[in-house]
Length: 421
Ligand SMILES: Cc1ncc(COP(=O)(O)O)c(C=O)c1O
Image (spheres, rainbow, N blue to C red):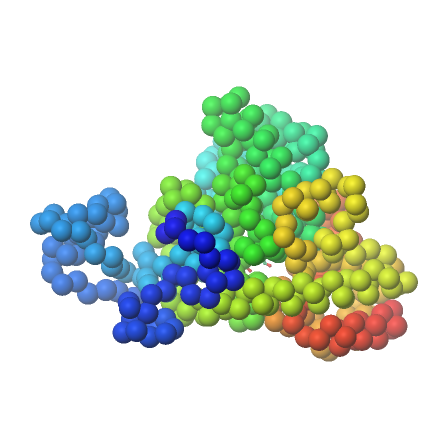
């Protein structure tokens, strides 16, 4: 799966991972809806199991063991195709597909952290991930430390030392840009610190980066020192708000650990979702371009509006700031999800939201339609106020995921909404 040739990501996105010769020459992949697979013989069945569990490549009676499947929870053709494509896009050795972004994130935590270990996470972080690290992991004896400004070396070191005081530091769980504020993490800096800690404690903490906000075409965490890049494929890769899926890409040995655990947890991506995903990823490049240009137009309108006090669009990061330097080095574009804050608080934000029709009032992001929500009372509702506000999520702030509509229509509706504030 490692040879991706010289193709551009746009081209990889269209067909990588599927060979029509494998399916009667069909130009597009079929959906393989079966839970189990039939073997030619008992020996063939044994060889498939030897290949799956022991990595055997040769049959006991000679000859190479052909590619094949055993049972869909262990793997199936549509999943293999998605994994090949995501690995190629993430420029990784391998990828594992899951039935949601949270399945991917929690499996990373379960597979890598052990009771007594500590984990450092960046703040803010998607609320499901926040709950996972703050409530689920501690219940299993894993100690947690958060870091708010993860472009700041001192802040990362302080969090890492606090974590080390609690137990061996196993993992940096990062999300960049962060949901909902689009705060960014300096991945290369975290890697440098992780390398130093590795020398001190005898094993280097691994680094996972949730890349959902930018996706594989606008940011490649692995190239900046991360070990694992996690994507909620529900968002931009799925792109139409009609499925739930997730992926993790990285070195084959690490991804192998995740796949082994996935087999036990049963949280793999199922065939129809995988098929939809293959179809969606084909248009990721053009959708990304349009969403990004729309987002720039909408963010510029909001920045100049007198009733708006703050816009966290990455393209507006101040020249000369640490975050700007990281953004320029790490990201190939600003994406199309960001937050903005109206002057006032919850009441003013609600007045705006209740005016909107073209912009849909809903959680989630990355769909073809523009979605907007009030983070403090929806996506981040179950994060304690203190933790929310320390991370920049205030009563006046809303998260906007700009879609593919005409930008003038989006701006006209936001303008009318802001008139009502
Ligand atoms: C940054 C980020 N990561 C992970 C997730 C979880 O993904 P899923 O809803 O596919 O489980 C979300 C969902 O909103 C998200 O925004």
